Image (tube, rainbow over all chains, first blue to last red; front, top):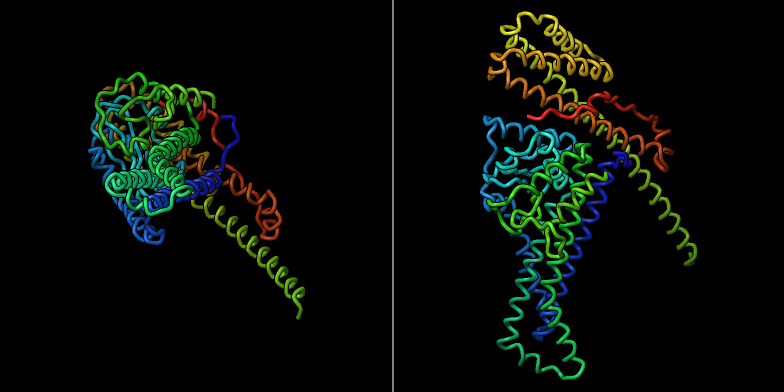
Length: 303
Length: 188
């Protein structure tokens, strides 16, 4: 790579800043919807804050605390067996990439699936897990597997796992709150709203309702955009770790040619996989968790 | 005391605090970067030892099969001895490159011995030696990244201002052998 070597530590610092900004943005979004709901229902803002905010935060906290467990069980993953040669070589690869990144070695898991895929999970580098499918360790050669593991190691290095679980939590909380609010409006919210004097108040209420309806869609789109951007970043950083963009490019080509027939895992963690296990998303769309494979391969080859 | 004097005192104190904080930050940054290099070197050292420890086992396994390859085995043993007796990072890395070359020859020669290639113990050792070799290469890469980070920290402003007074000089990177960059990795 002729690009100027990036310094991992500077890079991590920048990512931490990004992470904080994204988390803050998500919290602001959450605050806004709670306020909007309170406004529409005619409840006093302090009351809304006292009830809505703790519920939302507890929801996020629970999502966060159980994220590792739920990801692993949704994927049906098991710890890699060092007595099996293919799995041992995977453990070796993860170990090597951890050394390259200067991070503690993650635990290695295997997901029994014919598809070629891999994902990373964990709250921080110390308790992280890298999981690859049996399809990946059987069909990818050493160089390609290294590219894939480098990509996953970058997700850990960039704290994408944290960002993704928190964003998933907020997106879920917003969807939940909006759902509840819309139902309440149907049942009896109208009478409460009626107490307000018409004119300006009515317009504000309509605006708030529109916001409540749109917020879940908007938060989901934000989350998907973050996911796609972080995917490109992980590709680039993975290539920086292996010093070999071609390895990952070849792996992605193999994945592209491979027909997915064995999707497993949970949809909420789909962004943590190297490619979305549920749909290959070759075309670009605002609803994709990952950028199109062709574009990712093109960018890797251009490095 | 009037307001203006108070304000001036406040500003002066603030400036001093900022300067101290900056100094503190830069000092810590340099020390952290230095520790990272030492840590990265310790990693390499552990892997070098690990690799050297595997060699007697390998020779033991191979000896029974390769009776006529004394020279190949000897160069492996010699390279191992060189690793064990190396004192500076440069000597260690040179010895390591020597061992990499010797092992490459040995594994190439092993291709001619089907019985040896079927030996589970040999296969296991081969995997593990390849792994330690890759790990050394990646630790070396991490070491060089760390050195680059450190050198940038002490050679650019404002770090250079302090580094000089702290008696810190730029560190040297480990040479990466040309062939290891060019040769594609062997597929399993």
